[in-house]
Length: 245
Image (cartoon, rainbow, N blue to C red; front, side, top):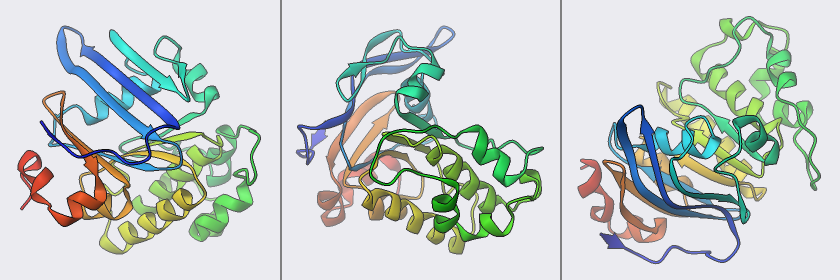
């Protein structure tokens, strides 16, 4: 396994140790371990079917790990139900957006609202400042939004929970390049406020632009961990595992 020392270890927002997960009898994650330092972005990369979304689902409690530990700021959460994990501070931007199409933009944000102590808590006004398009469509049915606007809404909905850790599963999927750039800008701004982010992303350039550290998984196992800076210097550290040239 290729390795490069992951930066920022010490204050861990999220820690996975030896996590195994199954879909029925199918063994998908084979002892996944990773560390997300507080206030950093960790990009989780891998080919289709490598186990990226399964890792996200296990952290969120939607697919409970059968073995191993998952800790949020040192607190074990692997045995908690999904709603308790969300209340503890983990919020998910799911693949495919999964907004509530029959609700308005404002209502989608309202259902996820959770107060949490902090210097600059996320509110309706702050989400609309991050995504002005949403404010323009505040009373519009979410199902009538464009794909890019729905992705903005999915991110805004997660932020309304005032998370301590944000899980993002393919936020650029299916979006036009201009919208990808806008979503990337928003993630950069969220990162600048100190939120810890685990980013699953097929867009290699976007992931590399945003991440502090990189982890690559292949067939449910860790194939590489290292700093994004090292990968920028030598893309071959990870492209051999991704089939990216």
